[in-house]
Length: 449
Image (cartoon, rainbow, N blue to C red):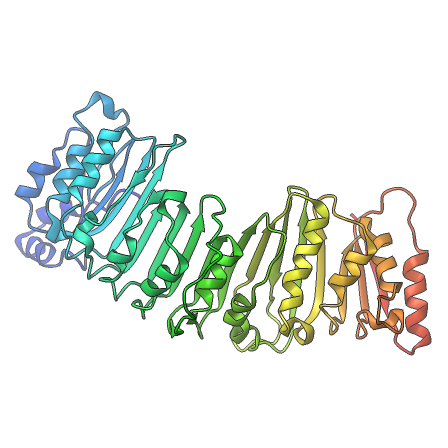
């Protein structure tokens, strides 16, 4: 919640001219009314001029411009009375933020009922429901009367809203769509979601995160007609890769420059459409750094790229998060994804491997991963993985002619951390010696904690 509004009411008592200026400039001066626990918003709205309303409501307290706070709302009158009073001025409401944690059913029903009518001036809506029970807040096609023509930002947390496509069909000026913790009962098929997105040409930010993995139907409709989201710059997704694949197959996003994707507990990743969607961004780099992180809490991440020879000043990072229960699946899953991004083969010049816990030490799995990055010149690895990675570097795979085919352009190898027990140097030395015999030197550095 934001801080209390500035105390502009004192200016009204300076002189008549100042009072006139203040009353004539409510939007420019960001005029807001502050109400204490003894205030009655319904009465104040009848007294003051018809300023635009920004509503912020928390189940524990209310913070409006019309702003109301209660430390102990149960000791005051019904805390929703101020909210409902403000919502009744539908033509003046510009922004609504509602946060409800374990709210009783009657409170939810009262708020939803108050929002079944149109809000013609509404520009921003944030609706968050936090409840550990199985009872979910569900919105239907009567919410906002199914229309919000001025809406710019829409954020929903933990709310089932199957009729969302109907609302989106009226929001052609929407710039930000955030859907967090989508429950199973709020599932919207990717084809339906794509149709809704096609009517949002000004969309800049898209977030779709499911509360738990929801498998998509195996049978799909006819091949989609692809459309363009010309303004989309940020994409966040959490769920099954198949859902994102179906969705990504139906649109292009030429301005996309930031994403965070999380796939949960899958064994096979076939993501050609997702890769296609981000290729334009990767193609704008001449070279970049890639970081692969393997964590003890059953999670692996791919982070790229860093600021190396990019046409933009401060490019954001892309993050790919893969949830895996088994340690060997972390390496396998990362390999599956990286091997499909063909631009990695020429673009990744610096590869950093981080490990926050135990991961699979099978040299063959590491070797399969390394073959996705033939242009790497600089490699950083954790010390406790040195034996298995060194073994992978000197081990030829089927079809390979020599160990030097792994990272053929490598000239710098950094080993970070302390080696548990006795340090093993021979595998790395064998790899370095093999490179020297072929006329390619590899400089080795060690950074100990």
